[in-house]
Amino acid sequence: MADSRLRIALVGVDHWYSAFSTARSIAESSTAELVGVADADPDRARQVAGSAGVERVTTDPSEFLNDSSVQAVASFISVDRNPEICIQAVRNGKHVISVKPLARTLDEATEIANAVREAGVVFLPSESRNRLSPQHQRIKEWYSHGRLGKVISAYHSLWSSLPQSWPGQPGPGWWGDPSRVPGGGWIDHSIYYIDFLRWLLGEEVAQVSGVKGNLKYPDLPVEDYGVATLRFEGGAISTQEVTWHAPKGGFRSEMNLVGTEGAVAFDSLSGKMSVSGSFPPFEGWVQVAPESTFAEAIDEFVSYVREGKEPVATVEDAWRNLAACLAFYEAAESGRTASPQNPPSV
Image (tube, rainbow, N blue to C red; front, top):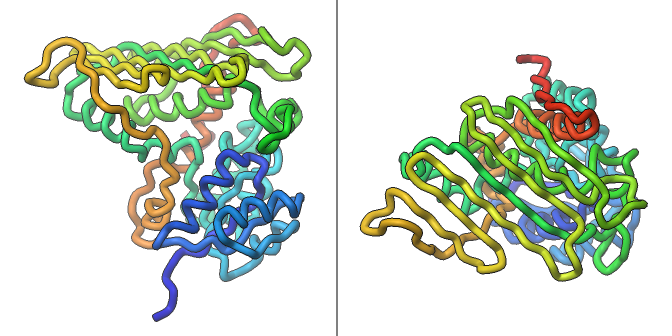
């Protein structure tokens, strides 16, 4: 019997945090096959490929992008180069898992979105894969069943140190280069929270205000600190504080969701999640074991391609996530509130 696994190539390993884990997940999947890894640095490509037990590497992305036997591409190249990779891939009929954010500007994001729609392929934003994580699926189920009531406020905080350009190498590399990214420490993780709330609430961000700055690294060309206040269409208010100023080993994440009928809280320091609301026989706060908030979603991606299953997210989600983030930077620069742009098709 012919191998029916979806043949995926990994193009670019600049975002190595995702490249390594995605490569291993593809290799471990029974529905997908990792064809090989492309990167301008052959040593980096070999490291990622080797971690997944794959030998084929190349410094030329076109080797995979023009290969008719490659059915999908996972692009974890730097954000400034992602548009060209995604557009070439989809124009050659390949499905895409994309680095986050998908582009630096909305014009670039629109070019990708138009190419995806014209090609009729699946485009899965990297920041949206966590919608399928056990933790987020559980919260979504609680919310859908009314256990939280109407969410009226949300708070996310993440303290991280500077990203590494490569494991063990100091300095943020391309993450800290404003010519290659739309922002620094704030967008790095806030884009996940924006995507989560858009999906949970089924609403768009209506208005953004905020402050950004360099509290620890004054010479860094991008911000190491940002705090935003987002108002969603239904009235919910979200505060998102995301930083690169944590001391070494000082990573911490925190989440609070407050609804009219219940609430959810999580703090990575305690490793516990707490809930309050319609969870009989309990009243008040109850601690429950947390589940993973991360998902590679490889098998789900294959089901979107093979079975025509409705994707958990699309290129339009990636566009709107970027638009909300860019509205924050506009607001932080101007000192006024800003509203995210709508996609050209809306």
